[in-house]
Amino acid sequence: MKQKVITFSFMVSLSFGLDLRPIQSIQNWNILQSGNITVEWTEYEGFLISKAETMLHHPMNEIASVIQDLKHYPDIFKRVTTARQLGSDVVQIVLDMPFPFDGRDYIIKYQIEKLENKWIFVFSAVDHPQGILDPNHVRLPNAAGIWVLTEKEANKTSVTYAWNGELLGNFPDFALHRAWATQGTEVLNWLDQALSKKNNS
Image 1 (cartoon, helix red, strand yellow):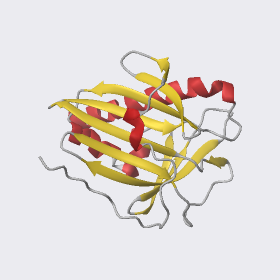
Image 2 (cartoon, one colour):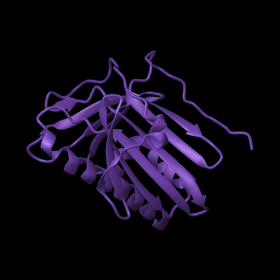
Image 3 (tube, one colour):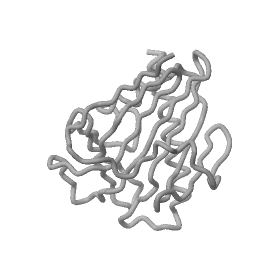
């Protein structure tokens, strides 16, 4: 079957920075957590990349619908306090961090690719004149990530979420491994909870 690829046009004339589309071919991962949600990390293109994977018992298209519903991220992912759409494919995300760490902020440009049994949402940091930084937050200029959904059965989907684990600011390097394991677990659990709530409403 002919593959169908849908790409959202760019409103900001800047190219992607760190591109994690090769995520499934990257090797030499270090395991942080195993079980229902696996969390790993590796070094790629000079950055520390984290990856969380699980199997969700929801249709691929329903999971994709939640992931691309950016304006409702504060209702889905509990550490997101603000999601501002700055263009058709540009969004500013503001994150809360546990005390005593400053919140984090990043502006990303994203693309969506739809294939026969796979759905991909890839994003990377850009500058944008309307992306005002709160003085109490730290901007992540190298933010990047990817969602990869692979349909296994009608109600069974493999979910991979990978991101640049750089946190900058006053966050200590020795706590990064724990932070990555927590983030990967929280994000995939919150996604599953949002889907279950949506189906039961």
